[in-house]
Length: 39
Length: 393
Image (cartoon, rainbow over all chains, first blue to last red):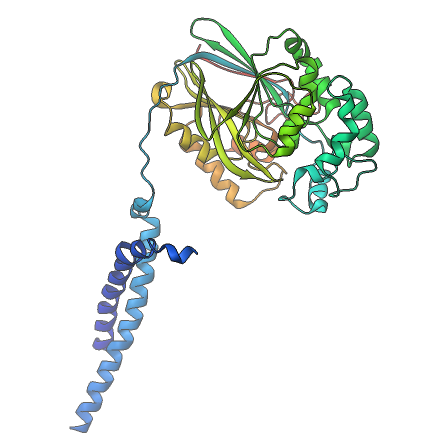
């Protein structure tokens, strides 16, 4: 396992956590207000 | 120069591969941590307990007149399945008392059934039942749920409530006579006749009650279907009718009714249950079939009323966990969840299921056991003719 691969995993984990955080705190609350989605 | 470039290309590819693996792992791990962490509840609606004061009563005593709504699960489930399943309108089954001549399963209706017996209601229910025995689908399987509630208030006065009317005219008439309910009705000792919901095994025995007291005050939940409302008229009821609205209704000191606007199997809508705030004990719950579910029942109550000692004390009734004596691992979650509510006295029967009662006992819950008389099948729960009382000593 190269050092670049390990660095990629470390950065990837941080990005993954960040994306999930964005999804929960921003994207889903915004989407939940889209009433047209229920029609 | 070219080798150096190739090396860098490989390193970048390694980094990107790591990024994808790490990103996916981080995202999935976040989902897991979030789902099992305390943050998951942040989207739930915040409910502030309203602490509505319903007052206090001294004690509640319940006589189980009949909890055996039907006598054979297999027969009942076979009929329901044969008629089209659990969502089919209960009035179409050709079950008693709404059968047409030589009624066929699932082909009936309220209108076709009631014309056969209307002339005998409420005073000649024996004739009406004899017609069912000849024509209905499995009339011998019908029983019924009904109980008598005696509330004692702090000033020493008492009120009696008859909850539900059962199903079979024959079974309910004999059960009422066995427990002296017929005389209580005739002597006007019953202050309120309370219909928990419209299900066949709680409601269709109505003419038996009406026979003994046509002008009894009757309370039922909003959501009765036109057939049910017509049946109240066709049974000969002449008393006051009170329809409860969704939410809390205060009745007497320490006594309230909570109406849950919920769809229920066999095309029924809405059920209401009692809340008693018993002095020095806590909140006592009393339900017919508890289709709202134990968690919704307790949480709604605790978020609404001020409870003595700020706690739950007891519960009685059908808790609707394994009514057909089946079991599913998800029911284990309910059994485990019950501990959280801290009940100190549990009187269950009917649609709770014997299996569930035994699971409660195994879990160490304070289940009041019965005597298994009058066709009740097991001592694991309160059977026909058994009594439970919630009173501070």
